[in-house]
Image (tube, rainbow, N blue to C red; front, side, top):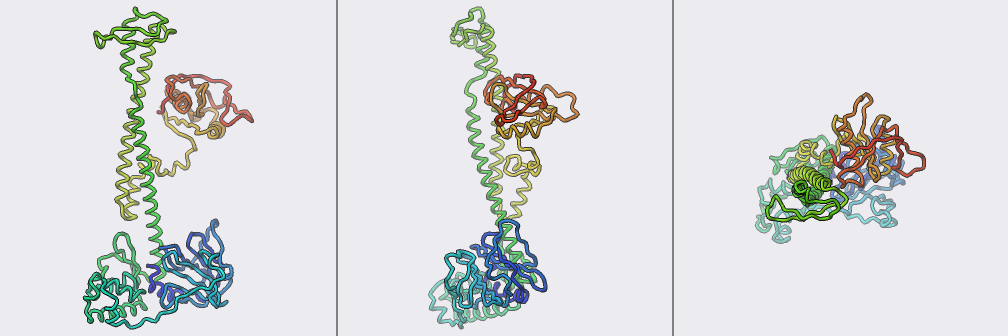
Length: 546
């Protein structure tokens, strides 16, 4: 609607006295498909904005210039310092001419399609430059449509166009009116838009012609409104639209103000739609990722921890039958009397140590099962939330609904790493956990990140952790300056995190060295992530996240 013919005509009439006499200071683009002409007159600075992006064509003026420092390109240099003499619209097409005192002209073709373009031509219509595809158009003459004088259309011509819906026939006869004004005329005449044209009587046709002339005359002193016609669709109108009586509308003093409002709303709606699509896309990705994780977690535990515990008890009950050095022993299954079971043994271990080995396996598997069950519950909950959010966002139809839904679920979206918390931007670039006592543990993500953590983000009193004898992440337990005693549980949890982010993640008992950061050295020239410890303590832990 910003480039409906009569809207453009009214806009030209409105901005002509404002722009005529202004001097062009610069012409540039800083957004795809939009050209900005920076002008100055005695009354101040004015910028002309013209877009030829398909389906987003527009023209409006603003009382200030806002040029970006980057990604801004100067164009149409031949027009610089020229004065604007005249602005007018083509008598029968959506083309605006802006004539300069040099005799050259800007031609704005606002077709709202890919054919829209901006040309700079001389007195003989030779193309000097073009906004789009300038190489293709250079050294050619611009072909302009010849003005068409509107002829009085009689009933016989109307009937001869064939039997089609009245609305379609009128759009052919009055192409400049457009869809919404044709609807308005039919509404005012109480004629069904889908009625067969051949069924229309001559007196109905004369009523239509009279109402059309009346509407076009009204455009000369318009009532400028933007109607909200439903489905978030906006319509700029120069007249009261009785067929939209039940729709909300906003009145404007000028066509330019209405166009500015329309473009701002359209840009915001487009941004919201893109935002909504991005959210749904990322939620869908989270959903598929979580489904795969659930499948993996469900099949993670293959051995029964109770079976290992039963085997350990069976060995303890039959210690007198077992000798050190044997690999296998046959024992009666006390859990299933009458059955014999075969138990594998390590020859180097005593019978008691072999039993203890099975108890350790059982305990490890029990812990893994607890961890996996907890993770499975978390993943199932995450999947349910993702499904619910996808359904909710897909059901939104307006920017207000999207905005409200986003605000209601902002914390959930942040927890799923779909959107960022503002505080996250201020957080250090490491994995961060909280352990017993409220202490934080920071973990490096790569060799370079390890170096950054150890050399730039650690204080002398912080405790530094690393798995002994294997590759892994630098891990730091952050110790506030006034802390007197660090709980043993905090140290063990930090060590478990270091073990988890190492090549010994799947081991059951991992040695982790730790010391205060002041005892960690990084000599010059050593590879990234390599450090030396002047002193250390060692703690044995299971790899685990808090």
